[in-house]
Amino acid sequence: MAQLKITSRMREAFPDREVDFHRSYDAKGNLTETRLTMTETDYFSGAWSRVSPDNGRTWGEWVKQFEDEGGVRRNALPDNEFGDEWEDNSDYSDAKARYHEPSGCYVAFGTDFYLMNGRKGYDAYWEKGEDNFRGHAYYSFKRPDGTIVKRMFEFEEGGVFFDPKNTRNPAFLDKNRASISQTQLLPDGDFLCVLTVNMRLCCKLAGVDVNTFFPSCPDLHVGEVMARIHWNPEKEDFEVTYSNPVMVSDLQSSRGLTEPVLTTLKSGRMLLVCRGSNCMEKAWNTRTTPGTPGFKWHSYSDDGGRTFTPVMPWHFDTREVVYSAGSMFSFFRSTKNGKLYWIGNIINEPWKIDGNDPRNILQICEVDETYGYLIKDTLTVIDTIRDGQTDVELSNFGLLENRETLELELRCTKIDFNGDRQEAGQLYSEAWEYFIEFED
Image (cartoon, rainbow, N blue to C red; front, side, top):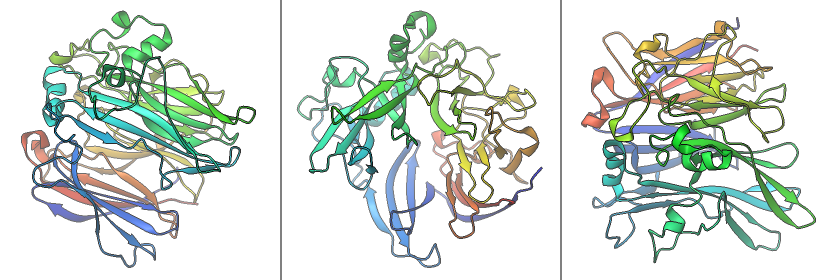
C-alpha cells in the first residue's frame, strides 16, 4: 500500500463565528484565497478575497466581496411583504464562461435560489416541513457576434423566468425545480451537467408514481439528472438531452440523493456518488426507521452519461459497504501519481449514524479505476477526535493541489466541539489546514 504523508496545523480559532478559507488558482495563474464568515447555520454573511502572485509567499490586501449590513440579508427582495430572498447566479458572465471550440461560443452555467419567507422560511423547512426552497438551473452562451442567449433547463412546459414584479408567480416557483451541482466539458465536445432535481419531477420523468415511491415529502427532496449539452452545427444552436433520473425511495433515504459528485475512471466509466440520509423527521413524514442504515450511494454510466444504473450503496473492494452520515465529500486525482482518491467521512460504527451525524472522522481512500469501488487497504485517516475532545465536525472542506509541490491542500473549519452545536448558538470554530503528500 502506498503511504501518504499528512501534516496539519491550526490556522486560527474564532470564538463567535465560523470562518472558512478556500483557495484556487485564477485564469492568470494567481493564487486566490477567499474568507467566508458564518454567524448562523448554513448562511454566509460576509466574504473577502485576496490574491497572491507568487503561490502564497506574499499576499495582497483583503477585498470585500459582500457583507450583510444593518441586519439586512444581502439577498432579501426589496419591499417584499413576505421577507422572501432570491440569490441569482444564473446570468451569463465572461468571468465564469468557458470557451467551446466546436461552436465558437463562450458557455456558462448557473443557478438561482428562491427562499420563501427568508430565514423564517429556512427554519420552517426543518421544523414544519414547509416547501420554501425553490431553485432553477440555467445555461447561457455568448455567440461570436456578442449576442448572449440564456435558457433554463426545462423538464416541463409552462415555466418562466423570475419577474421582480411577480415574485411568487407559480409558473416560476413551481416549474422546472432544479439546481446545478457540477459541469464538465467532455472529450467529444459536449458539456455534461449534473442537475439536482425535485423528487416529484424526478418521478414524473421516470414514469414512477410519486405517491408510492416517495410519498413522504417529494417537494422537499431530490434526485439527480444528467444533462448533455450538444452543439448542432446545422442548426447553429445547442441541444439538450437528459439521462434517466437517478433516485432512491424514501424508505432508503429520507432526503433522497443530494450533493452528487461525478468522476470519470480510467476505464471510461462515469461514477456518480451521492449523499443520503437516514434521518427521521416528523415534520417531513419520513418513512425511515431506527434500523435504516446510512450509506453513501452510487450509480454509474458506461455510455458517456446518457444512462445510469439503478442506485446501490457504495462499497469497498472487500464488498463492505461505505457507511457514512449525510455529509459532503470530494474526489481528487493526483497530478503526481495519476491516482484517483475520495475524501469524506466513513463511519466504522454504523449504528451511530443519525442523519447528518457523526462527522468526526475524515479519511482519504484510493478509488479502483475499473469498477469504481474504494480500495479498503488504502483507507487513511486525515483527522479525527483529538485528546480531550468527545466530538467534533470535520466536514465542508475545500481542496487545492499546490502547483509547485503537487501536495493536496485541504482546508476545513472544525465546529460542533463536544456536543456544543451551532444550531444552539455555539459558534466557536477552528480553521485548520492539512497537507497531503503522495508517493510517485
